[in-house]
Image (tube, rainbow, N blue to C red):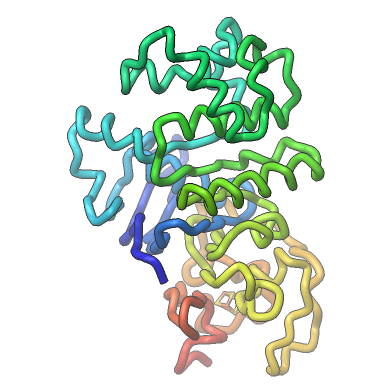
Length: 319
Ligand code: SF4
């Protein structure tokens, strides 16, 4: 496996809100190898977007380490962090929120280069055309404005802008979620092509496990601030073990144990993140819940190379 580009250790983010302390991210650990795609999947509000923002330090963590090429970015001062942001870029679900509607595509795509690299105005057109070409858009789109483009085209512009500074990692936060299925597919193909050509690392945050499976080398499943399973994307169908992962996939729970009832969907609502039960946070929705599940939150333990699960069903000594 390639070298780690990002390593997250014991990452926590708690938000003080009116009714208590919200555990958005609770002691999360993972590694993203360079040049690969890590998919982060889970229901809305599970903390996956918060993790994306923590990696870019758009939100400050409560505790833990975020190592980028071995350096803890939480220890960087403002000036050094600004430089570091050239290497770590993010693309959001709705790119128009970060686009100035009065700017044309040339100015939007070249904005990071004007800020960081001080390129000359005369160079902008050629640079923009090259970046548009990279995301398979015609060069004359440089003169357009965001409102003259489709959602898929705007998302390609957002990716072109994120690539302008030649980042090492791009975090896509639900970047394909608002697009039609066929457009989603073309954006996924684009990501795969860019990775092959430029060895870019991608963080792919998405609520759709089927889509994540298409693109991610490694999939991390989150539930209420906890990582509950990490496994190779190619193994999701056959090897996913955690009841929540299986439920997300709408699959039949069958791992040669006596769990005869199929899990077709997740019946009940998740508990409030402000009022989590003691023990496993999934207990109220899990048909395999045991006594120990109500006492101890299971740790993420490796079950085989590259595959870890946080569930008492798979931890030695559980009853
Ligand atoms: Fe279900 Fe217990 Fe596993 Fe939680 S730890 S997912 S409650 S079996």
